[in-house]
Image (cartoon, rainbow, N blue to C red):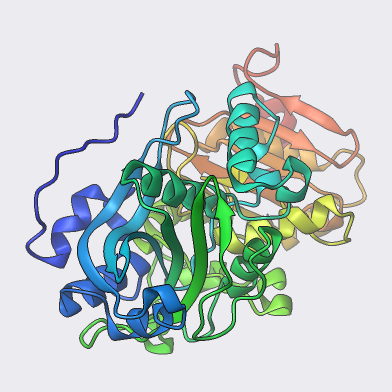
Length: 435
């Protein structure tokens, strides 16, 4: 079980926070961790944008920073292990005492999974944790399902830290450096669900009582501190030119129907990890396919956690065309910049081989020729074939699973570890591809 340490040393520069981030690669220009640290370090107190919003609440007039802790870990006190890691926890002085601020920095990252996605199979630890969070926040488990899980445990952390400091005032703030205010709707829905009303631009919400702590919420819209470049068209253009292999560039994999239709960002939060995984997918799987079978057409590939999570939610509602698994299942698959639960890196793309399809489309089960060729010749992790144009998901993983599924007749699992047909050569199944 992780232990929240009570001893701290001062950070002398913004970059000193990097070893304490969930992933060190989150420290880069234009992302929330760096933007938040740069802003607060430059002020060496409350940034004026933060102070002005706080002071719209009467009890926060004249508020001043006492101390702040970046990447503060808070034990959620439910016996389930782990912790909530707040971007910045601050202790501030008011005219009548002290208050705790829990500050989340945001650019265009989502507030984690929806509770319904996070709870997944309803494992015992998650059931206990969710019940405890909902009890602390005064909402039902059912009403929490459409909310962002990160907002639940960050608010719980603010309340628990306030009680530990024996103060009766706390505020949960989002310090946004996104010109589109990405995530504001999710934040507003969460605040409203807790009974604190609307989050108006530049104002604090009305207070609510949580476990004897008076809590307010606020959204701060800010610009990055001078010298920290936000995500820009120039940056994205250069990122799209990143060459993943001889034939493929990052831009080939970034288009998303869901993102285009709903105006969402389909850009990695961790570009370095996405590029590293994408290079493996392209060099070890897609290039050999293209050299052997002709042009590889990318149907769907990278999805940001925000886009995939939205697609998964719409699929559960029965909306047509939203064919996304949960973020947990798609980590190291379509979400290239998230490692899976075992820490593995991976990437997946849905592709079509037009020349192969045109030649074998009238042959019952003809897709199996290609499946067995890939199985015998390429280091794939997972293949899943679909009826339209025999498009198929092909995934690379650090520790490949080597499993082939199909929604094309004959449907089901063609092979997986443990099946009698998994080992050995299957040349007799695919040799005619080249006759």
